[in-house]
Image (cartoon, rainbow, N blue to C red; front, side, top):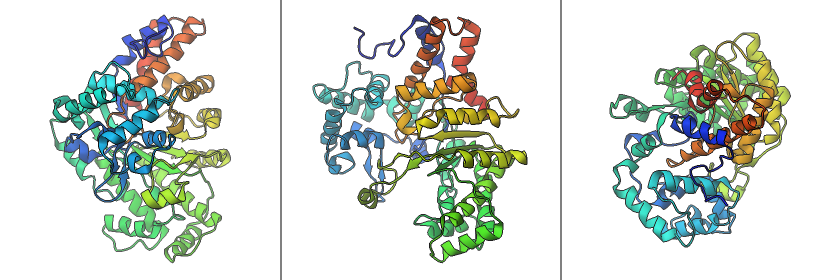
Length: 477
């Protein structure tokens, strides 16, 4: 029997162990998509206890912020919300989480938490109700006193070279500017452009958001779709001058319904009046904005990321109580293939298709995306169109293996830009280790089974590329 999570965890062959320990483990981290706070990086926040850094909770402004992966584990064990995201005593919240985690056999959260305890706190046991007090005391002492466990210290300890945060177009980027001007910060932190609120014309809050967008470009109002496009592009240029490497779109589904500017503007005016839009009007407006932005991404050399096939805020009662991004989203199964093909093709026809990373929350679309890549590649960079890393509900061992096997079957795994955290937790960087071990085990298995030669130079290039170098090249770091 193997020891739990020893140095060769997930590495089932000699080749896998060699590739991980000698190459993958040494690579810096490029976390090109996450949801951590640039302000907390600049201010070098120190957390009070493990519940605060792991579970988060209600913020001063009334919103909720935390790792909703962990919240879902607790809810699945019948834990009441005042312990999950509420204001109960931190230790009691932690105990409720540990009690649920003991049942999470096969869940990546079990591995992630224990990896975090090992890598950041030096705890070599396993977290359980029997060890909870020991872990709580050890971790809290380090969080409160260890100079390497402030936010910046955590990032440095994890060997992070680059962080791409997720930022709204109206954001002032004040904290990014302060980070860039601080010579004591050795890693790079850049904003990413997330214009969802300007695209979601059919969702509550759209008209209020358009007023914010107008204010961000010095206007009282945006009178037309053309002015909305102009404002978004102006803000994108502002972001790009401050280091923005990527945009991100969180779409319920990918639509492509081209229409005239007049038709898009008619839909926009209806929305401003508070009138309901048809699906055709909504999609026409959205397509107009997406095409405008994609062409701007191409011109400004910004990567376009598209995340789709999530059903968000499915629990109406809890959405009303807690707001978005609190753990009540689900996988969808809409087939958007014709629309996605048409969208990419429309941009390709005018040679304005930017570098693009595609993520579907439905794992059944892995092969679909991997065949799509080959139809739209270019000479800008190897792997111009990417199938993004197994996303959200798929970033477990089987999901990562499935995504990489599909990519290998139908495209070039060696050009893959690799892992990202997509996380709200500063302790989430061991997820890169998890991914890298799975990658090396997959490659090692192919080599030992005679499916790929034991070519040291080629294997080193693939491992170091997927773990780090490809992302550096792709995002022009």
